[in-house]
Length: 314
Length: 255
Image (cartoon, rainbow over all chains, first blue to last red; front, side, top):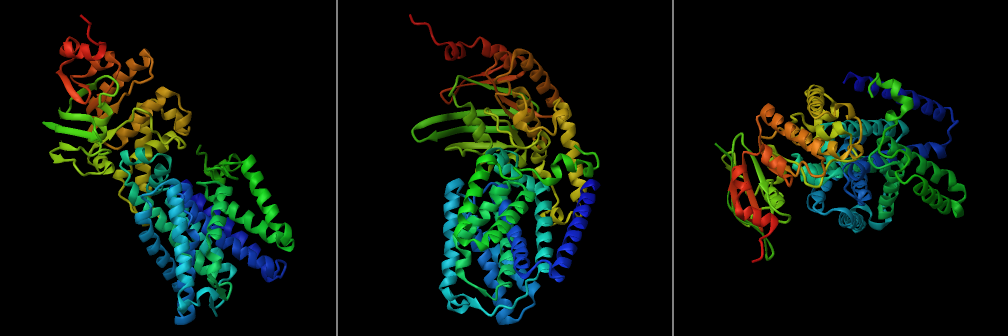
């Protein structure tokens, strides 16, 4: 079991080196403002896709309401920092808790549904959240909520992204995570093996919603303004595409999916007329040749070339 | 002592009586067979015992307490584990993970401990892994522990289902056609294994089976179901010569 700890430390060290390199490049101006902004977006999208992967990929519950939870986190934390001058971290945590509470309340009734029915129900609930926000004058309605302080910087996003990755990785590698995976594999057998399926479905949904709220808070504080149109079901689809493209049930896959899609969409920004065509073609080709996603359901550390880091296991 | 007792249990699906006036008792330590033609209601009886279905009427008691209104996972935690007639393994997971999942109900560490990897996490995970591998050794599956369950041969999948059920630490084990699709050699080995695990784990076993050599060979008492009702019960020798049973299985001669 110490193998796992050593592996964690190695990944942590590697991440820190990666962070330092990126940060140095940014402060030297080699990475310009445009890519700096997009790297922040990559980090936020990684948090969203990994947390959605916990619900869709690991627990196998097809949710399409992720942007709704993100909206809750974004608005709650933005109100707290702008109107109540709360510190950023505290506002982020309360935003995430707000999204978690809502996720729990929504998950409890809707997770009785399965498959397509759950997808439609969560899609509808995501839209309800957005439209409700649009009709609240206090947060600016359809015009959006303005004057949000710009707190989200690259170190913040990177730190919270790492935290998210470690929490979700450790969760899915525990008995609780195994219970979630068992539900995905065979719900009847999971129940017969003593897994409280309702409890674990709601738990995965709540944890996923909490991290979506956290990402929403980061998202709100890098634009000065947030607008309900950022949280439509198209946004939910976007995160779903990242998860499916990376591979359902793979954390590394979600990271890769979020990275590739965000970077492609940024790189094509100069050719707006071709952007969506190339983007769509890429997705079609990927699904054609690699329907299981970039990583399938394995992690990068499971690959052969990394096995020597695992201390002889496998 | 009676471990499981079903009194006057009936289950109706609309107008169809899948099980009617079902009276069964199983004493601690017994090995009981439940046989009957296809569609007689054997699997329905299993589903009633494990909480998948709730009986329309009647009572089911396990270990002195009623099972009515309990969810399947609660019943498993109380001490009844089962296998399925149509294998329901976690097919995309490894053999080892399949068994590990069944220890779920006995895990004591919480969410926070698993996320932060503190407290009982490493100790309990080590114990689970060690116990799971030991269990796989008994079923001669330990050399395949990192293979996907779906890639195992059929007989090995059946054995894995039993291993997984045992990992839930049951008092009563329900086996739904454990020998289905096995050749005579495998059936013979399975028979030995059932006898052995029963002694080793101090189990009470109820099994559904079509293979008469297996049922007659190891069961101490047998219940025969037909059209949802019990038509005969008793020792294997009595069942073998019971005219009702012969009629149910082979049909009656026309005068």
